[in-house]
Length: 193
Image (tube, rainbow, N blue to C red; front, side, top):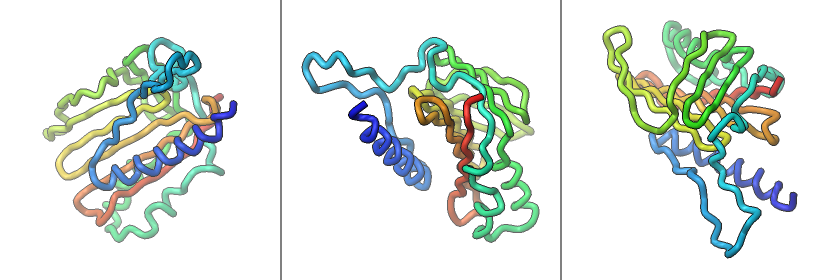
């Protein structure tokens, strides 16, 4: 209880570093930390992803009042109509998300897409989509799931991060592509149902 404020501050710092790292194509390593205190029985590592006890497991509904609007996110971008429509479709958030985590196996479904199951072990997998090669990497670290796809000149990353003891989840979409002068971020807040 006495470290809750410190943990919230650290989580905020990690989010800022994640955003900054994304601008430079770097992935920070937020793996489990080891205690340097002898006989520290109260320590539990952040990577709690084994079994169904993962805080990511559950269903979540979007909270539009605490989420960024896509129009606001794209207001400063100087892109053409077709490029803007492409960005809007990639940044559009589903109204509901369901996640099931069992070890490093993740099943993800939403109100916009059928369930998909994948292994989030940090290894890169190559897929062919519409004649193009796309590299996909999924990483699971405790209360955070990150999926990145790279195809051509476009990098698309989506991060699912639970907060407030699992009561809420931030979903951040990040897009870098050749027609953007900077990386675009859109963050949505979800509440557990």
